View (spheres, rainbow, N blue to C red):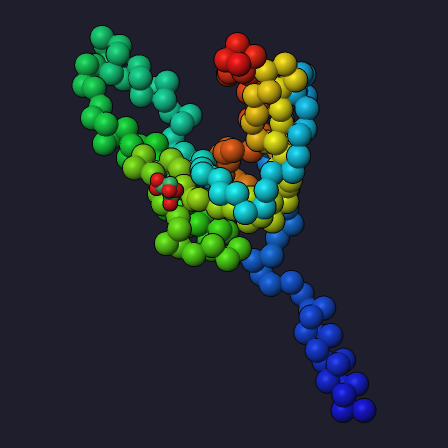
Length: 191
Ligand SMILES: *[C@@H]1O[C@H](CO)[C@@H](O)[C@H](O)[C@H]1NC(C)=O
């Protein structure tokens, strides 16, 4: 009886409401066009390391035009006052909330903070991650594609997902669905 009670309370805990951070995933990007002349050669090895880049949503992008006019229009009071590179970075830098939302998503998934690096422009979080880690995180599968004529190879996935509460903060994530349709090398010529 005690055992049954223990089991029942254990189950109750397990089945209780999901943790507040748990959030359903939404498809974030899907490959635009099916590759022609490229075949799936194999699943990408689980322990292969990918140089991942998580694009962070920038601030003030809708004001670019207005800002350009302010320095380029002769009648503008700020005509000719070009921006320093640091002003440009500051103006469009993602908000602290955005940086935190994406970093917390990754650390909640078990990736230690020391592995994350914020780019100088603050536009990206960089991370070397294994294929296994990314497939779990992005609810996707990576494949190696091989070009029929040249044997050129590239990796990619068809689509990937992110938690709904993170989506407003991420721009694109690479490498994922972005497919190079032309082969770079022509191995037949090299042989
Ligand atoms: C990822 O690994 C490469 C090669 O070892 C290294 O140059 C780069 O700094 C690493 N990037 C991060 C974000 O740790």
